[in-house]
Amino acid sequence: MTTGRRGFMTGVSLAVVGLSGCLGVNSGGLTDISISNEASTTATVRIQVTRLSDDAQLLGESVTIAANASSEYDEVVSGSQVEVHVSVRDGPEDTYEWSDGESDAQGLHVDITADSITFSPFVR
View (tube, helix red, strand yellow):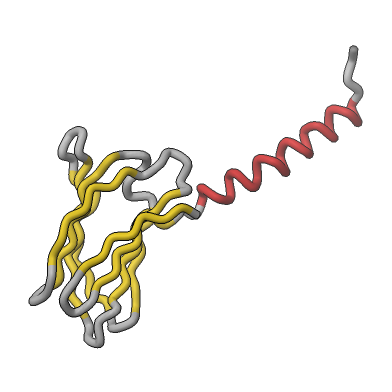
């Protein structure tokens, strides 16, 4: 069976439209980790993400987060099993082991209060 020019162009158009959604999801990067400061004061937060398979540090950063604000990190983990260590200057610190899926459908939300840190994995 031969495909004419019109059939070929229809097929190509459908393929481009179908792929554009997939490309759009990954092009901007999805949030892997978000940190919310639920405390009533500004917090200086240190986050370290280390891949467990080879001890490679994927993220090491200090950030100042205003009260009731958040900070997000895109495309950090990329399907790895990691250890996430979060510490707050003059406040709590905690460590959590987490595995990000290959599909970018998973993320980790970190809530900080004056005296605790809570890790909550989520699926989009």
